Amino acid sequence: MTKEEKLKLLEASWELHSQVETSYLNNPANKGDTAWLEKQRLLLADMALHLLQTSIKPGEIKLERFRDNLNAILTIADQFLPKADLKKATEKLYGNL
Image (tube, rainbow, N blue to C red):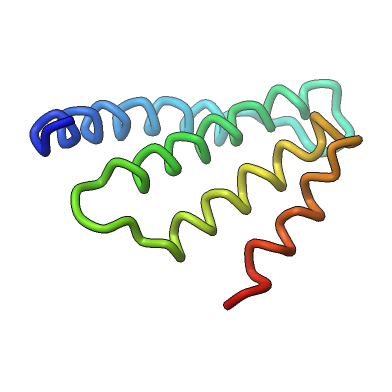
């Protein structure tokens, strides 16, 4: 992928991010509400877009940001896959700092 292609993709990802984040912020659900998981899906999409941005941004990947992106995704995804114990996996992300 060329630098120009990456920059176009980054630009598109920021537009998507804006839409997803606005939907998340406008969702009034609180933990325990029936709509809570839908709100969490929006947050997961938001974090996935941040991971995309971190991954394809030209230049060297910023590992601290990459680690933070993965932490957020695993933490949110844990409630969808509780038997996978994804939250526990996040401990290993920061274990070797």
